[in-house]
Image (cartoon, rainbow over all chains, first blue to last red; front, side, top):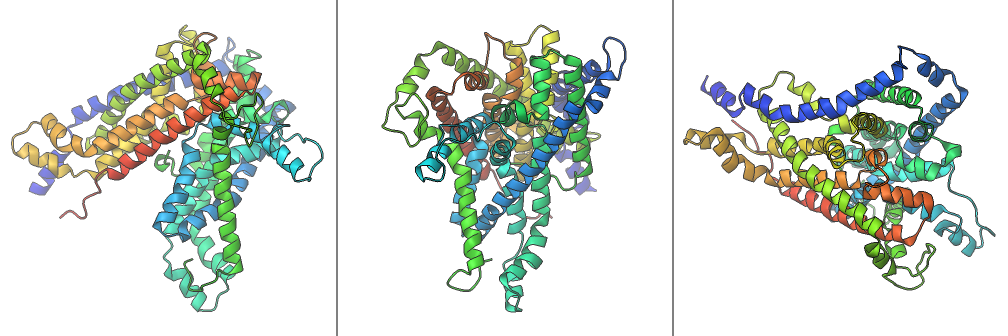
Amino acid sequence: MSALAAGDRRRLSGPASLMLVAPFVLVLIAVFCWPILQLLSASLFDPDFTLRHYEQVLTSEFTLGVFLRTFRVSFLVACFALVVGYPVAALMRSLPPMGAAIVGACVLIPLWTSVLVRSFAWTVLLQRNGVVNEALQGLGITSGPLSFLYNEAAVVIAQGHVMLPFMIMPIYQSLRAIPDELPRAALSLGASRTAVFREVIWPLSRPGVVAGFLMVFIVTLGAFVTPALIGGPRSLMLATLISGEITENLNWPLGAALSAVLLVMVMLLIGLFSRFLRFGRVEM
Amino acid sequence: MNVTTRLPHPAIAAARLAGILGVLFLLIPTLIVVPISVGPDKYLHFPPRGFSLEWYGTLIGDPGWMRAALFSLQIAVLVTLLSTALGTAAALALTRGRLHGARALSVAVLAPIVAPNIVVAVAMYLFFSRLGMSGSLVAFVLAHTVLATPYVVITVSAALAAADPDLELAAMSLGASRSRAFVHATLPLILPGVIAGAVFAFVVSFDEAVVSFFLSSVRDKTLPRKIFEELDYDVSPVVAAVSTVLTFLSVGLLGLAAVLRRRAPRAPATKA
C-alpha cells in the first residue's frame, strides 16, 4: 500500500503533466498538423471538391515514371548501403573497444555533417573535371573526362553515402548482441567460416539488417537535397518533382496531391513495418 | 568472430578489407571539402596545388554570405531556447507524468522527424505563405522548432529514464516542494541530457536545408539555402570554405553532445 503511494507520488499529477506537454502539442497542432491538413485540402479543392489532381498523379505516364524511379532508386540505395555497410558493422564488432570507438566515430562524423555539404562533396568528386575523373585519367584508365553526375547511379552512390550510418548502426547493434561463444562453438563443431557466417551470424544479425534496410528505403523515398543536386532533370525523383511543381510550375494542387501520396505511402510503410523500425532510437 | 587462429583466414581478411574500404568511403566525401577549401585554384582541385586562405577571406568579406550566416545563427539560437524549453517540459510529462494516452503521445511528438521532410516543408511553405509570413524570422523559428523539439524530447527522456525518481521523492519528504525538489534533485542529474538536447536542436536548425529551401525569400535566406543557390549557379571554392566551417561546427558540437550524454547517470541497478 505504502509502496503504491510512493510510486504515485513519484509521478507528476495529471493537471501538471498536461500543462507541461501542452505547449509543444499546441505548436505541433498549429505548425505541423494544421499545415499538413491545409496541404491535403489544397490537393482536394480547386476550388470545389475534385479528385482530378489525384487522377493526374495516378494516370500520367510521366508521374508514374517518377514514382517507379523513386522506388527503384530507394531500393538500390538500400542495397548499396547494405553491401557497403555490413562489413563496416562487422569490422566494428570484431575490434577491441578502442578500435570499435574509432570506427564508430568514423560512422558518426558523416552523420553529423550537413547533407548539403556531403552532396556538394559528391559533385566535386564526380564532376567532369572532378577528382574521380582526374584519378581515372591519371591512372590511364580513361582518356577523357566522363560524365558521372546527373544520373541515377550518381544518386544511388551519393544518397547511399548519406544513409550509410542508418544502415551500419542497427546492424552493429544486432552483431554486438551475438555472444563470441556462438561462432566459436560452430567452428569447433567443424563448420567452415562461410558456414558460420551463413548459418549463425547472418541469421542473428538479420533484425538489424531489416531495420537498416527499411529505414534507408523509407527515408530515401522522400529525399530531396541529394537528388536535387546530384540527380538532374533526367533522373527526377518524387521530392524534386514536388518541388518543381510548386516553385517552378506554381501548380499547387498537383504538388499537394503528389505530397499527399508520398506521405500516405511512407506512413503505410512505417505502420506496416513499425515493429522492425526504431525511429525514436536513431542517434543523430 | 574473434577466432583463435593467428593468421586471419582469407575470408576474414577480405571482410576486414571491405570494412576498411567502407570506412574510407564514409570519410572521404565528408572530409574532402577541407583540403579543397585551402587550395589556391579558382577551380576545385584535389589534391590542392598549394595552400591559401583566400577563400575564407572572400567568405568573410562577402556581405551576402555573412548576412545568411547571421540569419541562420539568429534562427538557431532562438530555436535552441524554444525547443529546449518545450522539449524538456514534454519529456517530463511523458516520462514522469500521469497522462492518458502517454504512449500514443510519445509517438505523436516524433511525427515531425518521421514524416518526409519534403512534405513538411511544402506544407509549412503553403501555411506561412497564406499568412504572408514566408521568409520571416518567426516562420523559420516556428518551423525549425517543430523539427528540432523531437530530438530534445528523445534526449531528455533518456536522461530522465536514467535518473532515480526516488531522489526527488526523498527531497519532498524532507519538506521541499515539487518544483524545488525537481530543481535541486533531478535537474542536476539530467542537465547533461538537456544540454545535449539543446546542442542537437541548434545543429538541426543551423543545418536544416529542406524547409529553408522553401521558406527563404530573395532577401532573407539561411546559410543552407544560400549554399543551394551557389551550387546551382557556380561551384566555387568559397562553397568549400563554407562547407568546411559548417562541418567543423556540426561535428564539434554533436561530438560534445555525445560526450555529455555519455556522462549522464546510468540507470540505477535494481530497485526493491
